Each structure stands twice: as structure tokens, then as C-alpha cells.
Image 1 (tube, rainbow, N blue to C red):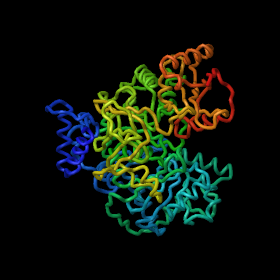
Image 2 (cartoon, rainbow, N blue to C red):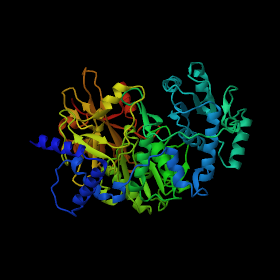
Image 3 (cartoon, rainbow, N blue to C red):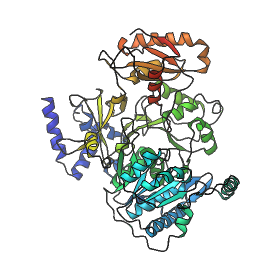
Image 4 (cartoon, rainbow, N blue to C red):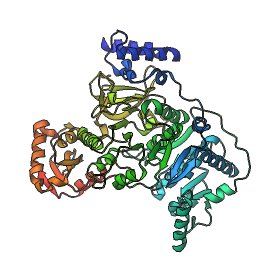
Length: 622
């Protein structure tokens, strides 16, 4: 009966037109606030109780129906003297920004690049990266965003798979392109020096160093420099492409943690939807505020939340093309931004940084962590540090994935910034929790796989229909849902809690299923533990399955008591977990390995454990 009732509700909701749907959302907001009386169904997807946190404009507003470039231009054309970008101290105004975009567009036209083409951008965050990106967007050309650190074979595949007509590459990666050039779909290579937009004094100094070392901006005679590319652009008029919500504005690649990287197509609607939610989700970000961008442009998080979103509200984007997360405290102190996005490990690093110990962080307003989860104990530690160092704001958390163009939920205010939560769905998005095996929809507080729908769902994986169908499910009522692979729940206030990823689940040889995050949450309750990571470890005597293994970093002040702490952590696990979830090994490390964007490298830890069996502080009997 419950299932039939739910299906009937969904059928009625799916038959509503746009105006009726908006009226229903406003009704649900009043219902959640208690302004009107009425029953709730108990299903987050139907009740949408999180709408209580949004004003009517956020609920009723329309996602801009214009090109991505036009959103930025229209929102800033009356503020051309305001600073758009900061690059090592050099200020680039919106007027200069738009002028350089126009010059780049003319240069692309001069090279025969036309609407419908694809150009590969293999760049970190430099001004030229974004001149190119927005120029291509004006022309209706797709930007294929590639990580310069990829190996030659992968770069070759990603260029050719998109049939790119041109490659724009940072000059330090020229050798990679030179080696694969005979096998590429294009011979048009534009080399960009990261020094081009530096302040004059700094630029001249670096050029002198390059000359002393016998280097040039481009040491390949058949590569054109960005300067020459722009200089010989000609005077052809820029003919802007028409607005198309489904135009593939960018291709960004998944991390490839579950197989080869897949190219996610980010449409105009995707980028505009994320930018639309900027105001309602991050009301603290205002025009002229400094917004430190340390996330690279070749990931969805960096392209949308790092550059496009802040520019859409006229904030100043401080570009950091080469970021070392171990120097995060020094970077903050030097730049003193109001707003920063990063992964949790960046913020956690502040709490034990000797450099940060006596620094003032009162200038911070948006302290944002996304990309992966943060344990409640670690979150408490970060918030305590922020309070003790003058910051009036708590850590804000967000959640999303490449397939929804980076972000789908956010802690927009203290009321929905619950400890351990990743916030509420964005105003135009919807969430539901589904049993991963039976597909039965769950109610408040019940765990299951997180499904997301909304305007920022990717246009699919490039040239991979099978994987697209596996990721995006269309229900019986025509709604597209991204099956995230994350296990979580939604409480009665609409706050989302992530429990773990299905792919992280450890299946023991005896068939028991173990989620690492559950174990980590217990281990981190011990005051002597700085951080930890639980992975699946294989044992040679078992042909199938893995066991939970805990890698632990102990706080400096507790390191003389290592043996006692490990024994205490083991007892803590035995007391709070079923025996099958208790790690079989506790391994002490000075630090955990991290990926290039600051996530713990679990693959490295699994490989380390499975290849050698040493430095083990405690082994449990199997």
C-alpha cells in the first residue's frame, strides 16, 4: 500500500507544469516552516523540507538562458573597472578580461576554429586558460579540459577522442605534446608560458632566469606561442554562437578511481545552474570580495566553484596555478582571502601547523570543504581552530560529483550546518535515498544510496553510452537521476549525511560487509589520533575478500605512548563495533599519502599493505 501511495504521488507531481511545480515548492516551504498545516509523507524527495532555508526568489528564479560567457559579461559589464583576476599580485580588470577574451576569439577564428569544433586546453589556472575558455564559449566551441600531469598516452587519447582541432598547452608540458604530435588529430599547438600575465618586474626577472638557463617560452620551432597566436589574430569580427542549453561547454574527466577516466560533458545549462545557486548557497560572497582559487580548472569543482561561480557575482578570483597543500597556512596568510574552497585535508592541516599557530584568520568568511567527506571529530577540530584564531564562521561543507557538475548540496547557513552533514540540496535540485539492492525508496533517517536530480546533471559521458546509462537512471515518470554510488541518509530537517561510498565497502572472506568511514569515526574519537584511513587488506591465505586495516597518524604529543594508544584504539573499536568491523591491523605512519588535489590516496595504502607486511603495531587473529 505504501509503495502504491508513493507511486501515485509521483505520478501526480510529474504531471505538473512548470508554474504548478513552483507553486508546489512554495507550498512545501511554508509546510516545512510550519506556516501552514498539513501532513508530510516521510519521503525527502516528495516533502523537500530543505526548501525552508531558501527565500522565494531562489525557489522561483530561473536559471539564465544564455551562454556561459554572457552570464559573466552581463553581470559585470557595468563594473569594468573592478578587478576580475589576481595573478601573483597583478590585477586584471573585467574590462581587460573581456578584451583579452575577444582577442582570443579572433585568434581562434583566424586559425579556422569554428562552431561545433573542440579545442583541448592542457593548462593550470593562469589568466590565459580562462581567456581561452570563455573565448571558445563565445564561438560555440567545446573546451576539452585536460590535466597537464597526465602521461603522454592518456593525453593523446583524450585529444583524439574529442577530435580536437587545436591544443593549448602549458609550456612545461611541451615535450609530451611533441612526442605524440605525429599521432594527434591536429598539428595546431599553442604553447603558453605561465609568466605571461605576471607583474612586469616579476615577469622580467623570470625571463632573465630562463635566458640564463638557455630556455625560451617555446623551445619547439613548430609550436606557436600564445603571444604570436594573439598578435596575428587579424580583424575578423567575432560572430557569437546562439544560446543552446545542451551545448557541451566543457569536457572534464572523472578521477578514474573505478576504471579509466570518463569524459563528463558539462553543458551550458550545467554551468549556468551551478552559477545560479551561488547566491542562495553562498550569500556571504559579494562583489569585490577576494576568492582564493586553489582548485585546478580541469576538474569540475575547480571550473565551476573555483572560477565561473565567483566571476558570476563579480568577486575577485585570486589564481594559484601551482598549489602545495603542505603550505596552505602560508598561502592563506599571504593572500588573506575572504573565501576559500578546498578539500578537508587542507583545513585539517591548519590545526597542527606551527606556522598557523599564532596567526590571525579573522579575514575568512567562507571556509569551504568539498571533494570528499570530513569526519565529525576532525570537523570539531577545524572549527575549534577557526574560533581560537579569530574566524567568526564554521567550516562549510558541500557535496557533489563530476556527474552533477561538482556541487549538489551545501551548508548555506548555521541552521543547516550540522556536525557531520554536507548540507542541504541546492534550491533547484532534489535528492532521494534508495536501497541499492531492492531499489525501495527510503524515508527520513534511513540509509541507502543517494540519488540526485536537477539542472546540473551532465550531458553524459563522451563516446560512452553504456557508462552513461549505468550512471543516469530515468524513472517511470521521466525524471533523470544520477546514481551516486554514495551511501547516506537525509534527516527530518533536510540535512544530508554521507556514510561511505559503495565502492569503498570492504567485503570480508566470510561475506560480512564493512564500511571504512564507520570505523574511522570510532578511531578518531581517541584524543591521541590526528587522522586515520581504513582500507581493505588482502591476506595470502584467503583467495577472496579483504579485511579492514587501519592506517593511523598519532599526534606529536602522544607519540611516546604509541603502544598504549594502539591498545586503547583497539579496545575502543571492540567496544563500539561488531567484531567483524574491527581492523585486523593498526599501522602507524608519520603521515598519510595524498593525491594531487589533497584527497587521501587509498590506492597507495592498499598497495602498500598488500605488497609488504611490516610496521604493524597490532595484529588481530583472523
